[in-house]
Length: 144
Image (cartoon, helix red, strand yellow):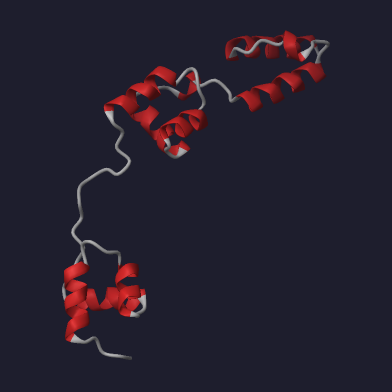
């Protein structure tokens, strides 16, 4: 095992906060694990910054509130350039309930086609609203 030089040790100390262990290892031509172990042996630790990288701005929160019942998580995520799961968590934090979410357009289309196949209805005769679809589904079950 190659010993660390004083220059390498100083490099680790100087860049521990502004570089990842992987970046430091690449710069030194060392293995990431070796750099992490050396930093630990030197008593060095990365400072934990108390910041929420996924924190939404007030404008983004408002967009989620305004569009929660109009768009899917995926559509909101695309607009905000955020992961879909992040939008779901934001909606939960804002107190928005999942049962108010409409189905995505492809899902709704598939449901309508499936319902049309099981009944004498045409897809365009099947309503788009979730409540109406549930009522129709109950009616179809009762008629079979």
